[in-house]
Length: 111
Length: 111
Image 1 (cartoon, rainbow over the protein chains, first blue to last red):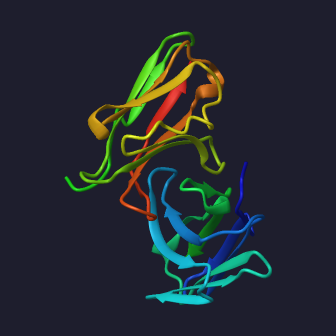
Image 2 (image 1 turned 90 degrees about the vertical axis):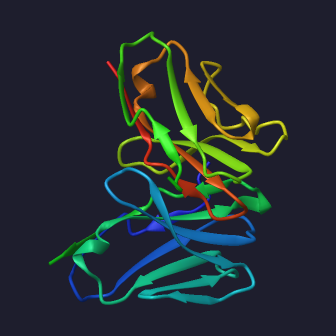
């Protein structure tokens, strides 16, 4: 079963614009992670936010978590063509040690 | 080589044949996961190993799929009597705690 569901499924923007992706989940979590995947191969961990945190920053990335709405957002500021990739959220469903991934958001940044 | 290594990177096999996919995790990582990803889809959990504990096999889609992890390190995913619907990218990840480190995957094509 897929716990996290990303929205939108696809996003196309111009270089320099901001990109916002959302993730919704169903059950309680201890933490939520965002990953990036280039060209349908290995995923790279971007950022982890714990259930008692509301916002985290890492470089041009900003992640928010709203546990009352069971949702998270990933904001990429000042996007670059190199940010073109698929972005996935992963949750620890009900405290499981197994990250459960959504279907991802495909981001295209046009130079 | 500090990353997770998977081999082969690509495998084409005939329907009905058995295949073995290998994963070399990062040294010292106690957790190891197998996922598969069909074209344009999210990650589907297959199996989870943690230390010397019995593996969580709840994601294996059929009894044609099996996996083992020898000595708490290298893992092999075996698919017997492959079917065309087994075609996918098989991703392995290891983790010291929460963050998962992924290999580049094995693209399996069953013809």
